[in-house]
Length: 160
Image 1: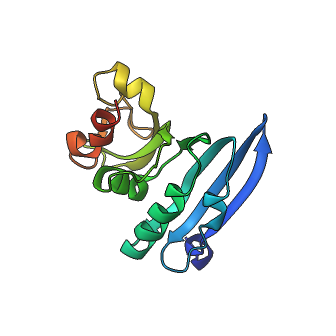
Image 2: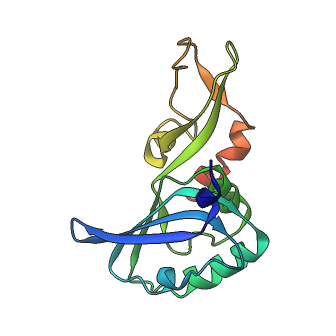
């Protein structure tokens, strides 16, 4: 990773009649979150590039997300572990939005391979709040969440 991976950015474009925001970098006291509060209509927010969120960033994020009108449809996709941690800890982190997909840190007990794997909330709910099986790309053995799975997936039960 380079220093640019940590610089806060929001890129926006349209796709299929909806606004897509791609957020990357560090959400902190320097992050300009005004574009979040200004969204309207059908909005997809990709958080894939978010590297970290500090306490000042959480406060600024909550302020911005609360300003989004209730008739704006928010869907959050590709949320990495730092965002999942905030979803689990901070009530209202997604405002009135819906979490669609997230990354989970996975590890192979056999060969110690580590990877962030993308999962869909609907699939996890269908499995009773559990992740679908993932096999190691290196050795083919089953991978496990590199965290306490029940704790990491707390948001699935909370938002059901």
